[in-house]
Image (cartoon, rainbow, N blue to C red):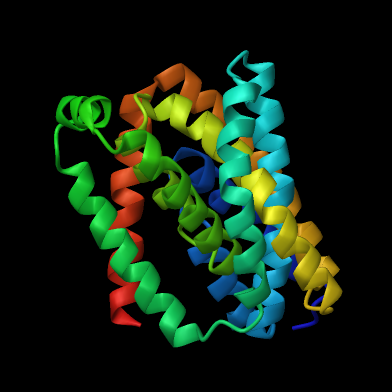
Length: 250
């Protein structure tokens, strides 16, 4: 199969739309797009780099979509994003060298840990976040780690951000998603620069994925706002279970 034929473009765009939908409501879209590109014959590093371009476009689109739906808090989003940026820059230096086997195992463990946190009633989590005496001190190192993970591995970072913001800040899941896409938009920039600089981007694949992700993103934002936190929690839980199971079997 040629990397430039219409069938490949359509396949990548369709899967990109599904990934974009999942990334906004929960996370884990890259667990679909990267394996697909590898299956189609792309080098793993090129697949990762091309996916980062699409993630950047998707994040920009999601921020614009939330803004259009009158759901935005740019000062808070910017503050959270800047807390992750140093980690994102550091993680980007290692992004082109990650071992595939290590990547899947780390991601699987992260998925399981987040599933465990979702089993606790939200009221208890919020109360814990409000009363945590180390909350302010923990925010900076934890957000730095989030940025590093996002710059280094990226796949599954949406789950990590949602878990962190749920535990450290008093937010509902719709608001968390609103901040999440802005955070991803910011800390993905260093990784995008790194992959382009090292010539690890296939622009045909990146454009095809981007087209699909933009479509999936706008649908997801509209549904998240209309259906509220209940829908986000359902999609999040199902996505985590499926992806964690898949990764443990690899």
